Length: 66
Image (tube, rainbow, N blue to C red):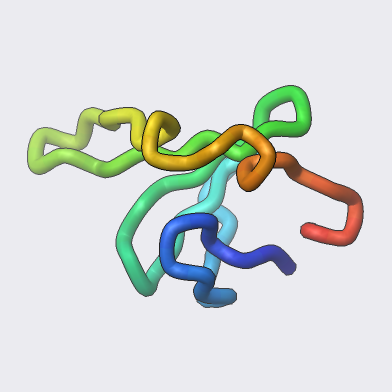
C-alpha cells in the first residue's frame, strides 16, 4: 500500500487498472511509467491535473509503494 501524495493517507482504494482514489482528500491517482499522477474530480466528472502541485521526486512509484 502507498500513501496519498496530497494528504499522506493510506485510505486509498483501487478503481481500475493502475488507478486509485483517496477517500481522505477525494483525489484520483494513476500510475503511468512509474510516476503517480494526481487529479481532482470535477462536478461534471472530468479530471483536472494536480501534478503541478507536487515535485516529480515525490510522485515516483516504487516497488515498496504498492
